[in-house]
Length: 150
Figure 1 (spheres, rainbow, N blue to C red):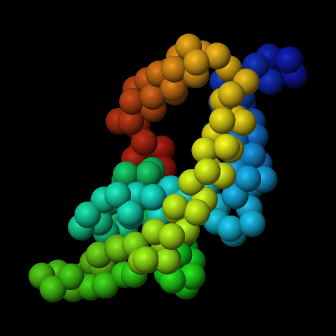
Figure 2: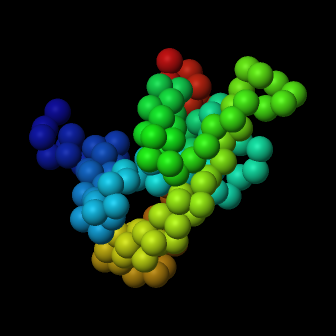
């Protein structure tokens, strides 16, 4: 197999796109010391009621070890609270704090800029097509995700 063929693999190109997207996010949002993974978790916690770490992991497709370390960092910064449920002492409910909400509001323009810089090189129609194709790939592989994560 040639190098050119390998570089044309969809998986390789998606990995490169992820590197670019993360770099642009870091340029725009880096001063706020939050990673894309932490941002995804914080946004999900803000918008989802009665959420625990297991549901968070499922919702944003994180593995358990990633979720644990992300939640620890967010809690250490005072952006979220984790509290045991009255009816189930085995799991903790995740809640965003006022500081976490302030951070999300503050960084919203920077996050939007990073996304625009990433996909803005495409026309509006191409952006919709990209979103549709990526969603289709994810959907078609969803049944395999649990097996592939182990």
